[in-house]
Length: 328
Image 1 (cartoon, rainbow, N blue to C red):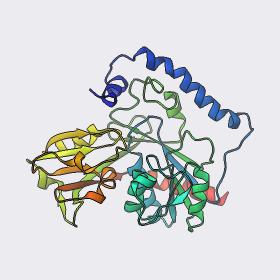
Image 2 (image 1 turned 180 degrees about the vertical axis):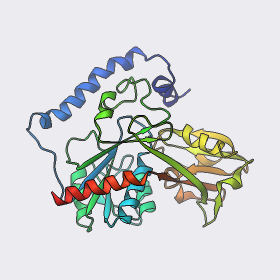
Image 3 (image 1 turned 90 degrees about the vertical axis):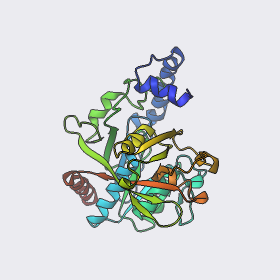
Image 4 (image 1 turned 120 degrees about the vertical axis):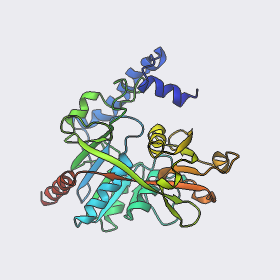
């Protein structure tokens, strides 16, 4: 059992929390307090940009469906007449200074999630550790609203609307703060967010239901597309380097596909040997993983595209909030 699997059992599987993880929680609390203190006492103020900004994030470390939600929001805003852009920290990329993604930007440079968002949504995307400066680059591209991919725990920039998403199956795990549990913030903070999205599972209270739907597999090499049903009854290698690989594996099995599961650490930097299994079975992977494998794409590699389905009323509420922010 590797470290990621052991942590998963502690956070979500009911395994006891080792003393050394529990001992680090006060340190985590202290670091968070130090980060927020200048803003809490008024020494610093969150920076604003010239256009409304909606921040999409979570209070749980790891996968919650945040990136598909960002893509769905961008597409919905476009349909309602907005010119959105997306700002991200660019986790996993080498870029440090704010920069706009170009057609040749790679996941190694700017992170896998920004590349995926740019490819799927077709809108300007900027990355940088300083997300305020990165967002300003988007304003220079003519966007009239910005969606921040992650950043709820970042006090440095002002946001006009916050959307928090949780995995409906795993929820908040053992309910403990990092690193003893998966929580970035105390669980009580969940109820404080105005818009809360539940990805799968059973939404509770006024949580907004979101479902991830994947119907097609797209070849990494060439332009072939197949319905997922074409793989029903066959054996595939399923590769996932996301926060919750099991969600991907379960989704394939629900389609009647025989899955040989290969979980990797979130944001894993793939090399060709990672996808060589010594047989002729096809390899299915997530879109997020596919953007890191395009440079060595070959026959037999497929990506499964997913779309976040959300209630129209929720999307209208986001639109209305941004229009109010524009008018104020």
